[in-house]
Length: 241
Length: 377
Image 1 (cartoon, rainbow over the protein chains, first blue to last red):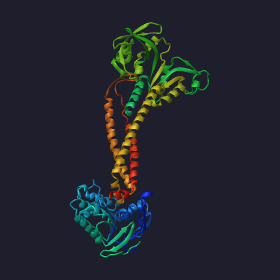
Image 2: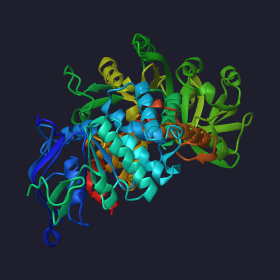
Image 3: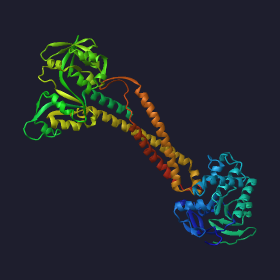
Image 4: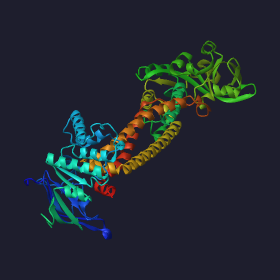
């Protein structure tokens, strides 16, 4: 295992679309994400941020290059293995929460745990309640997710992403659908969980405030990372083209 | 639907067995080439070489031997002939059955077929007859009336109608007249007391094999009820096949309905499918969800369908109808057979599995990233 690296990718190429609409979405992207660090990917719409996120999250296959989860090459594994790694090592947070509306907050949080199957029913119930309590929704356990506010739904999504204690949290504009106050609260929560839980947080955002608050900012343009710099620093750092 | 078609078929079979027995031994035959082995009865070519002798002269001996067979419950000699009947201004050609009442009642359901009159009256009065219900209508007579039967010599003999019987088979009820065997022998002017022996069997399905055996054993023609009623049974079989095709089409249509419902469910749940996939659920997990959903639909449908089917079958059996054609009945005849329900459940399960498999497979193959990317725009 590469010491201190949770997730990495090298030389990622990705084309989207067919024939005349075919777009070269990612052009040789290389990146390391370390535990306990927070990474923001910024750039104009269509520059390939979400595509990179989905490839890092093993939801999409690169046309060239590789994704490593720790030391294990992960991008070419069969669907069964990719699913297992997503379930065990990766937590996803989406802009629109993507909760199962017919389920309660508690049930939503337990969905990844049910798939992993490591905990007993009682343990899952307790862990789900503890996670929701940690995000400030301890009194909303049985409330149907559709009856929660936008901020509450996003916090349920954060709790769900942490359900199996993943090594990496991937977030696609996690605050994009929230007001300023809720955005900051959600991000603070994620950052705290990443730092305290020694997890890597990799998020795509258009929010400059949130990007600046991350440990690393990766600027993307036309499918390339044109600059990576640590918080508070200006200019390209650790840039791998 | 199967309960109805099968019900009428079973009603016909029961009525036929109850009136004419499961097996009939008829005239004696001899091969033209004496000493040769008796040819198989299925060989028409060899049948033409038979020399037939009208009547059965050793009926008691044949019946004594027959009773040794475990499949034989009872047997009864019948002297059968065709006559003209007259009552008032009405005339009809009748099928006369000269019977030994005690033996005949053991062999057939005649006692249960009486719709009016008394069996004792018939038993105790040699000059009495039992007539078929439709024949009674044709001749416009009832119990207590008299009917005249025209002997081959041209003279009419008067009989008292002791009872009216309804077998349920129109062809029987329209012509059948029962009288005492000795009276029939006199009336028909036959030198023998029986022209056939009818049998009641424990297992009527084995009648063809027993008929073949009796032919060899007794050197008399023998016919099973399956052979005797072949054309009518074919008609019922055709109706049952037709009903089975209709039922299959209904199940197929139901399968299409479930297919559509599940396909629409898949389409409406692509976001949830993508969410589950992002959380590590495998393609087979997603397929399993929809196949499980199909199984729940099938189970609920089977339970409700069986209940509703049984209720409808019961309701149909209470519908009053007045049939007087091939069958005579005053209500819908149905049969209660658990196998209909088992087959319906199995067919439904197969149809639902096939109907849910394709949408389930489709759901599993949906690339989650396309949905997630589309939803985040």
